[in-house]
Amino acid sequence: MQETASPAGPGVLVLAGTPIGDVADASPRLRAELEGADVIAAEDTRRFRALLHRMGLTTSARVVSYFEGNEAARTPELVQALLDGSRVLVATDAGMPSVSDPGYRLVTAAVEAGIRVTAVPGPSAVLTALAVSGLPVDRFCFEGFLSRKAGERSRQLARLADEARTMVFFEAPHRTAETLDAMVEAFGPGRPGAVCRELTKTYEEVVRGSVSELAAWAAEQVRGEVTLVVAGAPERVVDLNSAAAEVATLVAAGARLKPAVGEVAERDGIARNALYAAALELTRRPVKP
Image 1 (cartoon, rainbow, N blue to C red):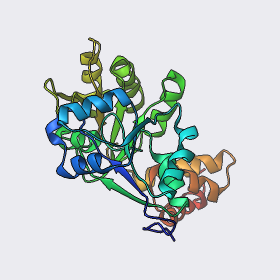
Image 2 (cartoon, rainbow, N blue to C red):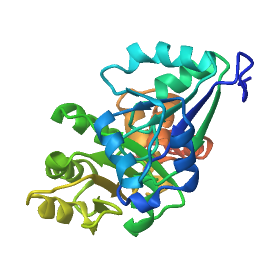
Image 3 (tube, one colour):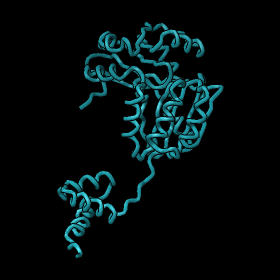
Image 4 (cartoon, rainbow, N blue to C red):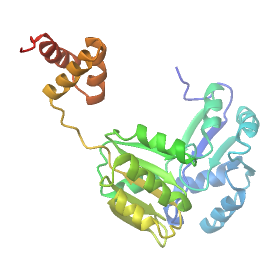
């Protein structure tokens, strides 16, 4: 069972959601936590100090860098500060720490040490993009950044081709066009999507259309922070008789009935019992002379 309070001391780990663009989105609680922290672990200390300046704040906290390159090495130091009673705040360049940003390692280590972990809710590029995309938002999944390597990216997208939920991705502006081209190959040209650029900033732009239309649009240089939203796969209407005929063909070619039923049922999302009965009826029918 996870602890919600620290038995080892009064230290608290605070994950601070920072504005993704418009500094006016900073909440009063974020301001209070920034001013009250003992230690602030910032993804980029220069950007963090620029954020404080834009917010008109000062802090007496010890500010240390905490980014992908030093996250593993710095985590024990921050855990010790927490055990010693410090209020440690994690702030990334934008949005919520640990969501495609540093923070996960520290949260895990703090939980294991029995330290209380809390968060300052804040603006989210994921939820903002979903809300303005015009795509279904009742069910969605966040996939973060795809691989920079073309082959692995194609394999990742192939595994998502049948995902029914709306999908959200982060992408670098200079890779947006090639990622959309890969989505055309994996999802088909007509899959609806949206490119959400510079959310909440002065030049915010949301471009909606099929992934092929978006790929053509992105062929021109894309600038700024990019979040991609892509509709899930449409529900497939599967004919039980056709699926049973496919099973019968596999059996005629030498496959065993039950494994063939399992393979087709899993792929097409059909109840195994119904498919087995239909396929069994087909395979038992006498061949006409």
